[in-house]
Image (cartoon, rainbow, N blue to C red):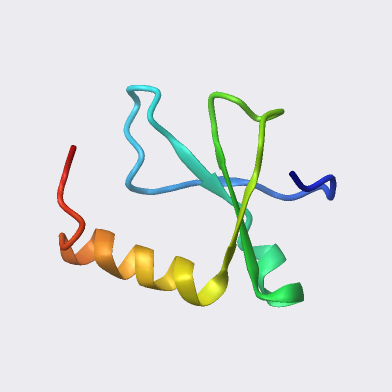
Length: 69
């Protein structure tokens, strides 16, 4: 978990049904890590993902190659 303050934004792919993901894009340029969290639990754990892995994930989501569950 990270203790640094972030400016979180909600994913444009998140719906209003409570299944929202937030990320802190400003943190990426500082160290190449994308902090990601569940918007329902802002005080909960933060997943720190390498920027390259996060970019591949976003590409997969946009391209529909990850499927749905």
